[in-house]
Structures are given as C-alpha cells and as structure tokens.
Length: 119
Image (tube, rainbow, N blue to C red; front, side, top):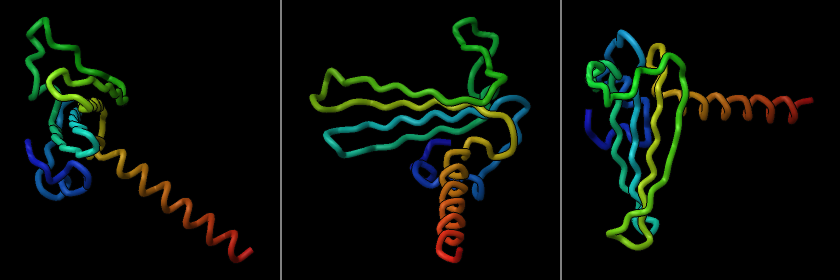
C-alpha cells in the first residue's frame, strides 16, 4: 500500500487494511530530508507477496524480527539525504511495533510519575 496516511501514525493502517502474512511482515520507509523539509513514503506488506523469492537477487525472508536503517546523500540536491528504514517482523500488526514501544514507554513514565508523586 502506497500512501502518506501511515507514515507517522502507524495505527491508521491497522484500521484500514490489515492482511495475514504466511511469513514475515515487512515495512520499508523512505524519508527524504531536503534541508529540514521531510517527505515520507511508507510501504507495508507481507514480504513473500512483495518480492519474488524465486529470483536469486531477492534477499531471503528473515525469520527474526529486526530493523535496520541507513542514510544516503543525494548527489542531485545539496543538503539533502534519504533515510531508509527496513523492518522485518513476525506476528499480528508487528510492523507498528515502534508506535507500541513509544506508547508503552509513555504509559510506564506516567505510572512512574504517579508513584513518585503519591509515595
């Protein structure tokens, strides 16, 4: 799915169009940083349906959940670069894990503040 709706709010995609994957889920996000002005592109899908596993040039599907990131300067634009994030994961709605991690950290922080305030 190509759109801008789930770039910053990963829970929107959960409500709109979820699919069950036979194998790993995959998320690829490109962020173009053009002198501080950011443009996002996010692609989420089942890895097996997105890539041809019979093609020897295709990287094998990951059996582990992990993310990697890289940044590349653009030769055609000064002060611009592309940041790419790749994530593989297993499980329901797992390619929204970053938002869950952030929200669970926020909830933990609130509980800690509550305990400190009333102890």
